[in-house]
Length: 267
Length: 293
Image 1 (cartoon, rainbow over the protein chains, first blue to last red):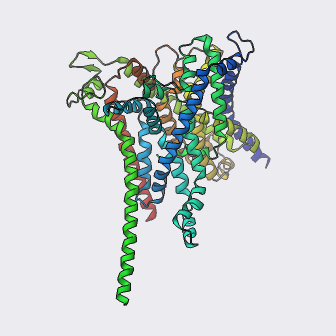
Image 2: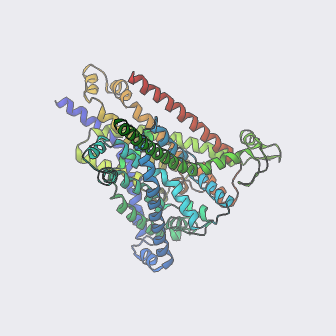
Image 3: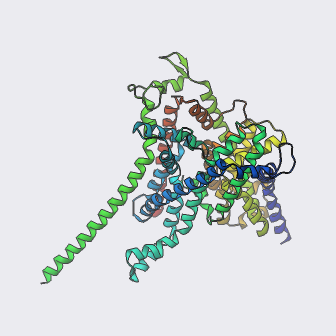
């Protein structure tokens, strides 16, 4: 027994390099965001960076606007994606996997190039590049992230439950609202988080889709680290911390993050 | 009377079948409509890879010229070299992806084995830490690492991008390997040791073969995440001219013109992946069929 314990404890140590790596390259960098956010370029403690943010109405408005855009994108993706996931999961295709693959395949083309192609598509049809293009482009980029987790939960669902509900006299609407929908909630949560988080923090897509007409919160952060120079880093860190809080709050919604790993399992 | 009833029942059944077929066709049509919209920009890239125009969206006649340019690095009609930075970007994209995926697979597999043998409290903590890079958006991962490298005075370049990619790839490897560990019989490794194998032999002959499928899918996932990354690379690449394809395209788009050779490049990448996926799908279908037999 002692020997077994020795072996087990020895193998426990195999994770140590990674734990060390995580502390150095994940935990410490996040602490540095907090440190920079609460300090002056000279290194003294200050809350001035946050005061500056809340007093710059343009910055606050950008944050609110970005959250609204992310919210609308998530909603559109849910409304478009849920029926698609439902049809794929319920229909008895010979190979349902092929359909799921077709929805994931575009993600293999660099998303910036796809975004540029979308801009080209808008130009071809003579459509203006603005809010509409932004929403279309965002939905286009993140729709697969909504479809996939919902499809996954619907497919894993015990389909005999539907038959049971039907046998017990439930009509189609009831079967959906009382059985299918509640059981797919974890997938919906995952989908919402997987779409909302990248859209609220995106910075390159908006620039390309609107030719710099619309600035999102992510671009605001990026600019304070790029063009602003060292003097703006602390302000940028404060903005990043605000973003971090939003992300942390959103991630509480998520229950089954493990879905991500299966993105590769499909290959 | 009976005949009438029978025929009305048949009528009813037929109506139902028609409704079902209509529903299925409607569902299929919706999926295909979504797919058409989803693929329209990609098809556009593909179509315009067969014309020579510098401006994307401008058709100047069918030609394979851009494909030729891409492979020779030289435009024989205008006698201009294709931007050499494009080839450097391709090289660094591949080098960083393979490097990061390899390190992430080794680090993540070891971590998964260690994690599996941990007490539940420690395991929870490490699992939480492991989930941070997956939840964090790329801009925050990028900025936090940017601040770290600045803070430690490390100059940014190939190594810092590699480290950054390992950061966001490894959690997915851990998650891919973990299910294999929970599925395997935990006693086989001990049995190998009892039968006189050294820990290294037991690892190589017992543990690794069991974990290999998880490691492979983790490796492939890491490759794709690394190749597709823009945000993290953007903040960790520094200003020494290191570019990956993502940052190259971004810089290109900001300058206003897209290097035309990107069109054939990504058309080829897309076709390759499409063919690979079709082959894999046929193979797995065959396996499933064989198992059924």
